[in-house]
Amino acid sequence: MELPPRASRRRPKRRLSRSADFERVYRQGRSYGGRFFILHLFPRTEESAAPMEGPRLGLSVSRKCGGAVERNRIKRLLREAFEAQASRLHVADDVVVVARPDAGELAEREGLEGVERELSDLVAQAATEEGA
Image (cartoon, rainbow, N blue to C red; front, side, top):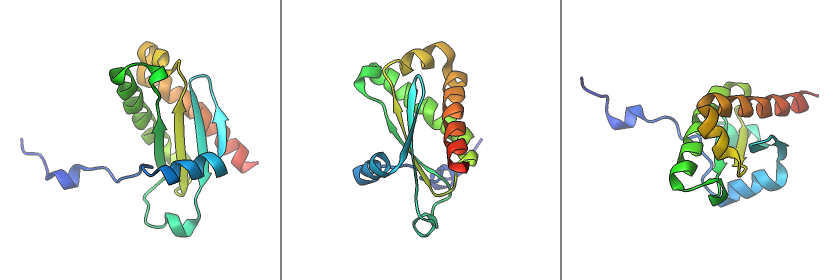
């Protein structure tokens, strides 16, 4: 079985990577707290969001969450859960998810389902507040 060329397999780059982007979301955005994660949401202007294909995600998982293997597992689960929730967010949203120290327990105990449920609750909380 032959795989398609590497470039065609890549997902669109919908990540926050610059520290200035993180700072803008932290300072100007809204935050929504849950037991295991804090979601920071900043709606960008439509003009700056035009070339984007959806909301952008930034992750912050500190060493308090565990060793490198555990932190990478949490980030992988968060990215996967975010993809499932992306349709509920506005195309121009920048989102930063900060993992609390207990997030490793959730990832280990319940896996993707637990992370998806927690992230879904935070996105619903944000959508309710935006709509009000």
